[in-house]
Length: 183
Image 1 (cartoon, rainbow, N blue to C red):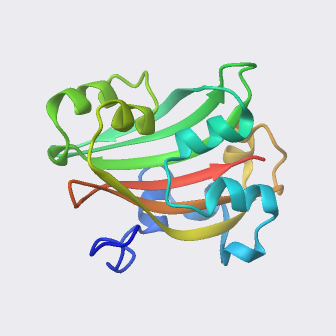
Image 2 (cartoon, rainbow, N blue to C red):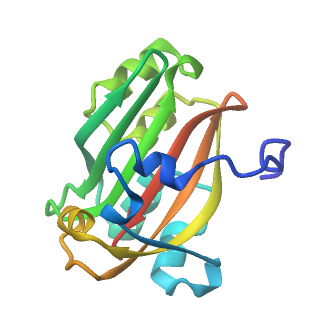
């Protein structure tokens, strides 16, 4: 999809997102930016696109997912949360994420459902047909530090991959994302 939004410079600051819940990025993992072609094929399929991760991980894992919210941080207009997505089929964690959104760009009912912390963000936006564009910004190779390893049920030092992305709602930069998956 080509639009004036897609031509904006990247605006998601990986370290600022992580700093919402960790003192240093290294406490979560060691992040190295990667081109799409450097990712293993399964991770390319999961991450190198401009689509919602909820839909993508559900298709990849052949299972609907539920959101588990681990921590939140809020102020007047912004809401952030640290989450995992788990398969409904077996409870396996398939994604870790940090989301920060500016709820002034969302309709009240959409914001209410997101704030309920019961429905994955992507599913809420899709169900409410919010005019949105997901812009992939960067892809990351991530060497897991102990907290991330625990969330993803892998060993510290294991390599996984992730991305930073921005969701524009009604052409406004409404949602910043860090999304890390296991294949």
